[in-house]
Length: 328
Length: 139
Image (cartoon, rainbow over the protein chains, first blue to last red):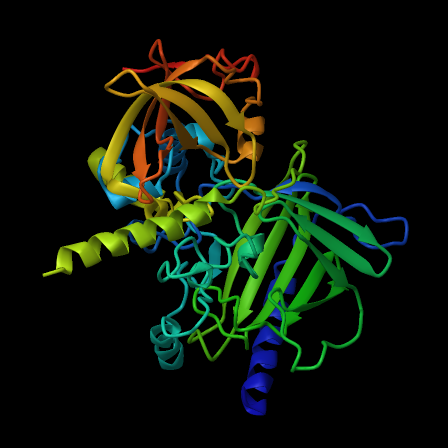
């Protein structure tokens, strides 16, 4: 990334911070013993509100009460009996009945998308460079994309880091999933730590902890530094590795997260992605984190990951079948 | 208007119908749907997904062991299910897809008890999730 591009990115981040400060909520959270806003506690971010606004709601930033009731009604009665066709890959991908899922039955905002900027509620278009990178991705020795699907099944490294129980990267690890949506925030003077249920792991974020590590150091979760702006914890993360790609992002991604307790039981979690080498403009999502009395459970994902074995073994069987069919 | 709304919401749901942490479609074969009636021998209460072991009698009356992939233990615990919820000897019917590997493994797309009740939140089997209406009657 050129110096000029970095400077532009920094300016854009600053502009976003200003825009946000103007919208700051009026609730004043309690303070820790050492005088910082107290974010601590257990939260869940499970929601049926999608990241991107569905095309059907184009132009409708907010849902009506009727629309929400209909949406929640459908989530409540979701079942293998509804809208799934047997014998299709889509049905297999949906894995099992609702019994096994924990993806929420409610919207957690009246908005029709978690994305609040751009105003259309959609992830901005990829730059030409990002499109080229995406096409190249399938030639890389190790698959670096997120999500549940890899590019092949020759070996584990063809599969996504999520599937390999390694990480969802950022902001993936902070985003709602189909289960394991619990987070614990703890604070001590100089640090904020965020324990993440899905795949496990804890982010330890230094507060006013100086500048980022050198640019040669690249990390799956990047290098995070926090500071307070009023009642908002602002965390800026750089130094991403090129192994944790979020919707095509690059290692140049500059991620700004903003944590604000806006009601006694609601923490507003916002992230802004500035990555001019990937997206044609920055974008921001706001995800409600709701306080929960639930526990945060261990998810030792490697404990019995028979699924990985099943995927690779299944691919060998299919290969052998294909080879048999092509024999003279 | 109602119909338009219905279409709109149907289209909206898949956006949040996130998948399991790994690709079930890569592990199990859409072309091999399978129904198994068997008796639970043990449940592996294990991450990232539970596995239910069942004994199934094949056509010749021979007992064959099958393994059924279920959800993550964390989710089950939250739904009031624990490792005692499916005690050995329980007869279940599994509707799923066979593993591409050809091993005796399948995903538990839908699991019902021998009397037709579906394993669900608040199942009386679990003895938990008080206030829920009990196992669904499967149509």
